[in-house]
Amino acid sequence: MIPADELRNAKILVVDDCEDNVFMQMEILRLAGYNEVSSCRDPSEVVSLHVRNSYDLILLDMHMPGMNGLEVMERLREVEKDSYLPVLAITGDRNFKIAALQAGARDFLTKPYDMTEFQMRIRNMLEVRLLYKKVAEQGRLEKEMALHDALTGLPNRRLLVDRIEKSMQHASRGHNMMAVMYLDLDGFKAVNDTHGHGCGDELLKNVADRLRRATRKEDTVARIGGDEFVIVLSDIAHVDDVLRPASKILRFLSTPFDVASVTVSVSTSIGIAFYPGDGNDVEELISRADRALYDAKRGGKNRYHFSDVPVLLGAAM
Ligand SMILES: Nc1nc2c(ncn2[C@@H]2O[C@H](COP(=O)(O)OP(=O)(O)OP(=O)(O)O)[C@@H](O)[C@H]2O)c(=O)[nH]1
Image (cartoon, rainbow, N blue to C red; front, side):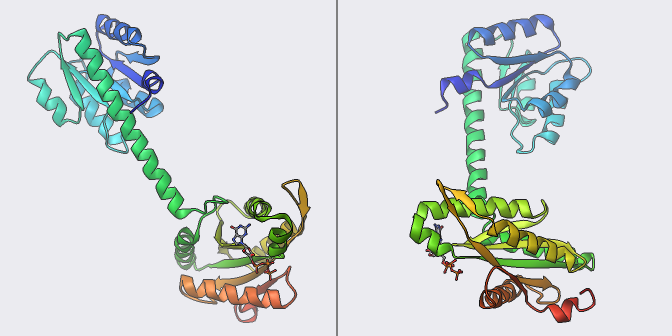
């Protein structure tokens, strides 16, 4: 059920060209305890007001000069993204009831209306509207959780695959390159072993923040496992477009972290693969970057290693 204070704070718009009607409805709503009620006497303003304020309920008079309630609803449908029109149609003409419902109104009141009926219908409509919003928000959160890592909030492997695909398509259209950087922290296990798993978790969150800061907004930073991260770099035209962020990341992550009241030090090794030079599909690119990462680890850690740099970037280096 919807808590009473949420109902009282629902946003309501009264639309009627007649000042007396507006006054009376506002009074009834005020007496019923609703705090967020506003009004409008010009039907042509309803859509822009709704876009700005996203009302939970619009009490809409059907007969207004210039634009009737049905026309207002038609325009509201164009802007209402989730196709739920929170409209309670008010009409003195019984023949208008069906047309109003067909146009998308959730309920109607026929004038003259009974005060109690007016209040009950408003309450019922608001309950449904607010429940609908909760369900939609829950769905959005679940979708978000399915694509993000719970600890750091970064994209997970599923979303990463999609981002790499899009970046490859973008590179292909622009006759450009993109790069996949595969990172694995050096010495992370020792942090867990010495300071505990909680401290290790905090460190991973701090690493995620620094990686975000070391990259551009349009790049994707994903966490795909324990201490493993992947970064997608789009619009690569020159080797410097990769060398610069790679060096920055090495520098950022080898700077000590203050976590859980201790200072800990790690570094990172990075393997880098390019599209189209190193592969033409997502899994191949990730696996080439992973192998390059292995070479970086074997080469002494705290460094980056290209998958196939001489072939791809010979001219640029
Ligand atoms: N705190 C924490 N630890 C994790 C998580 N997931 C995996 N781990 C641990 O992370 C460690 C990763 O192992 P390694 O990559 O071999 O550790 P490392 O010391 O960085 O090894 P090198 O890469 O060789 O330097 C393991 O000890 C895992 O148990 C997590 O979500 N939180």
